Image 1 (cartoon, one colour):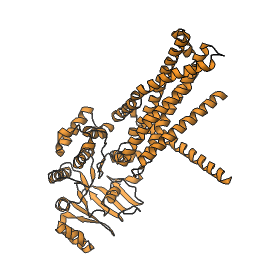
Image 2 (cartoon, helix red, strand yellow; image 1 turned 90 degrees about the vertical axis):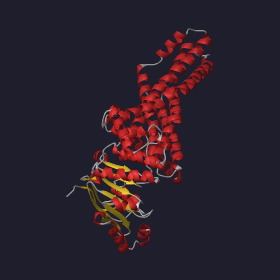
Image 3 (tube, rainbow over the protein chains, first blue to last red; image 1 turned 45 degrees about the vertical axis):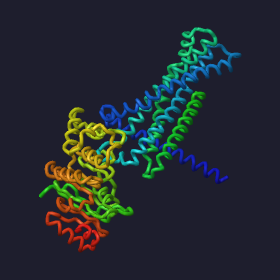
Length: 263
Length: 249
């Protein structure tokens, strides 16, 4: 019994200290960027743009495909499950809420973790191993300002934009399917879908996605910079970054869903 | 008397392979060569002198500032005035030659974008770097070319003191003599202080103002202006016979 309690306690302390270190790392990086007015620095601005293109723009085709498929599948399942006890308006409202507030941010963050977090961890990890980061520091360049914060900010912006894009396409797919199934007006369904989203919900949607973006890029950068000089460490730390990023996003999503119910 | 730009007193790091205490003073406009056989701790010594590794004891004063007593932001500002070329050059592998050169100047707002690019081209030309390679990714360049780009990248910020680890790494004889000429130009024309870690004893004995050699007892400093042969006598007295025999031929 003692062993189980001890092990659980140990894991909890490790998890809490990890989250605290990660939070401090993100806060410190963004703080440095803000103080040095990174957005107005040509080199940092270019780094931010490059990262937004890679994380956001390049991910659009895969997000569109996934969103369209998911919109159709979700609508079909909702119609199948609820047609006996609810009407069409409820189905579209439920679809709109589920996709915008839960599925959209969660699946977008999973795509971002799979595509960008792994790429960031490998890229920064290799830079660290080859001494490129040390060489930049020797040139008086603040790594937080030039390498880390642009990745964090780009991931936050990309996560938000991609989640909007995902939700829009998934809803479009759902409305298209529902319209064909019920032979109703697409415009009416679209109006119902928008009506289901309150300003408060939209605000939470924005905050949630920005937060997820910071977490995804933060874990990737944090693990990459924790590398030492052993060559086998890059894949190890990349894998840790992915697993920890996913875990934090899922736990936070669960907590937010629980808090939403209580409120 | 010239201004002291580098002063280390009792500088020491308790790490395996690290040199013993480093006591050294270098004046402005000096060419110092850190020589010695491979694996004698030249890189670790240079890292301590260049302020890359924090010492466990002792002081390091560069350009009149105690590097390890400065806060992070001040140390970063001081870093702009110190150039350091790592043994593997450590250029940004994802960027091309020009992007590597432009980055530090761009980050520190040295000039307008056009001005920075013009300066980068001038520096590469001055170093004798073939301009056809300017848009090549650095990962495709041979190590000696990477070394030239790394030196040019440091020079973009007009450093007052330059540390180069493995100053002539994998250079063919033609490139070696060109690079040697540029090191001398940096000292004589640009008024810089250079600390070069090198295996090239010929260059060190002919051109260095100060020769540095690591012995188990500590760093030996020899003013080479008094005569290069004195250095060999010094090493002989210290019992470094194998190395001096190898130098003499």
